[in-house]
Image (cartoon, rainbow, N blue to C red; front, top):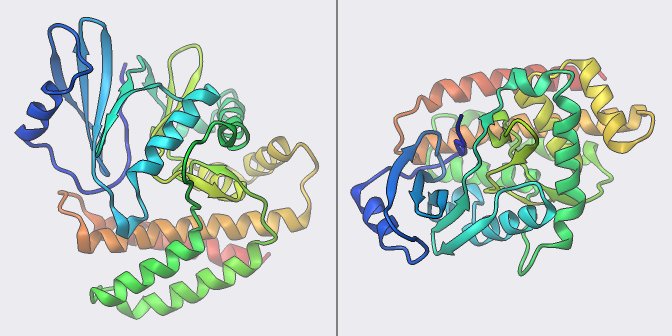
Length: 304
């Protein structure tokens, strides 16, 4: 049973983290601090005091990945108020303390199960439509096509080994933007990996709002499908359930465009991470894997 918070980034565990955690004013009594696996945009610890168990997330802004911690914090609070996410117990710059959920982290196979996928979809849809009612302060938009263009500029500026591909990928992103409209907007999670979904045996929880922001719902739906290996039949059922109407050819076309954009963004995220990350992770292999998945999806899209 665990509550691993899995995401993306560059932080590394240091003894200074333990000292900082012990100094926080939110604790009561004896403290136990243990690292949690899975953090990539931040470092995660499980902390137990006399009142209960919590997760501490440490991580600064990562502008090259459009990740701003004020936005993550606001989205986390809105998600909790919506009833889909753990409570924020305490925060300070680059640090958040969250309620610990005794739970099982889902796998892609779990998400794709016939009994699980409708529950996941209900959770995501609730966040999409209810979280904006609870969001406070400035809000960001997560516009994948802008992210793709900005990644292209970063790769060019930093002389990426993938430089010969950059203009082609950016041009494809621009074409997908034209194909995917018109757009309606919701509060998107924008990183629907299976590891960002928890099952406590009674209900599901959504975690890790690093990339949350206003977006078309088709981006999250496309990411949910591509990240968790949904079949074409499951994708059609997902779209019918989410929109509560028969699936039209136009909707399928726009959805497939956004699914391609989701895979393209993941590919270029990895290309940028090859240049900027200090983690011991094979980003080159991850880039190659996602580029192949993107190429296959884009080829299918062109044949619609």
